[in-house]
Amino acid sequence: MDKQRLETFGDAIIAIVLTILVLKLAQPNSLTIDGFWQIKEGFIAYFISFLIIFNVWYNNHNFFHVLDEVDDLTVWMQGFTLFMMSLLPYFTSLVSKNIWSLPAETMYALTLIGIHIFYVLTVKSGINHNRDNKQLIEGDYLNKHVNTPMIIILIGFIIGYLIYPPAIIISCLVTVVFWIITFRHFKDVII
Image (cartoon, rainbow, N blue to C red; front, side):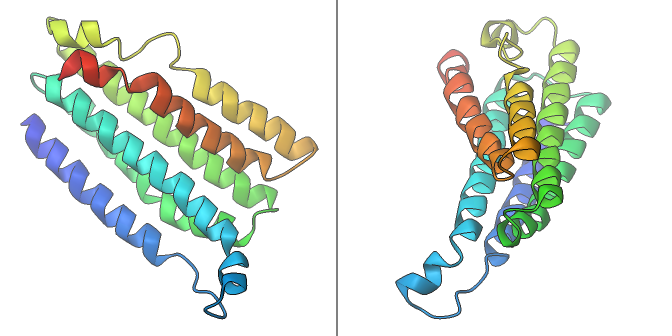
């Protein structure tokens, strides 16, 4: 399959997911600062979800830029990544309305974990199919930090289940910030 066709498909899905995500934002009861303050959890959850989606899009762009070609496994792993991303608007809306709910927080974090796992599998399969690609090797896509997001979210689960349920969504935010800081150097290597 042509890698640009897969990337274009992914871009289209991401655009749709972002559109649905913003449409799921609750409307304030009154158009006042207090009205918007009452739905602040929705904006926080939206912000975190937007960062997740944008970060995956950005890293996909950089990764697909250096791939020579994609195989069926890479296509399927990318498909599962997009599937997990398509669940974000639903769970973002759920967690924004139920910020103290452990099930809502858990499902939101599990969606993020799913996105992370399938993205890593997409990268692994792309690298395995393009073993002679020097830029992929120099890009160090699967560096020592690849499992850190999982550890951060697991810490969030422990704190969330024992002390403070919103710790789970906070750990998701920390994970996204970690992704952005850790993986932004790929741009310098690749492009």
